[in-house]
Image (cartoon, rainbow, N blue to C red; front, side):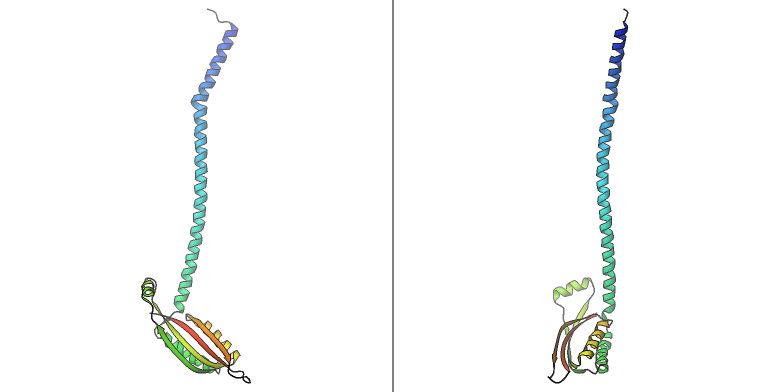
Length: 187
């Protein structure tokens, strides 16, 4: 049997179509599916990378904040009074009041006992006690301002709890100052 030219061309195109179909079914479509799944994996990896960058930045921010808080804690613990330094603090108060020509009318101290819950919490960090100082002074305004600035510059941790300033008389420039301080002493 002799195959005509037209049949040869038709067989050629059928074989070519079968080859293209086989190429598409066995190579191109699986590779295309594989490429699509790899693109999805790339998207997932990019999201994870972006999340890790955010976590890294968050961790760096937290580390910077922890470092800042540790420095602050170190600064505050350096300002905390230890042992005999409290007596030096009281002497400093007396000498400053003399230097600024302030009259100390009264000064009382009271050590505050921590409550049981505070005592348990402070055992984990560091233990301290709070000493409340109540002072009554007679002074001029400029001397008292200098005195307050000196208290602020002391290398001790303290807080002014309350402050009451009143004029002693109509014709005088003297002030009666009632001041409550809290001094924190590390045990």
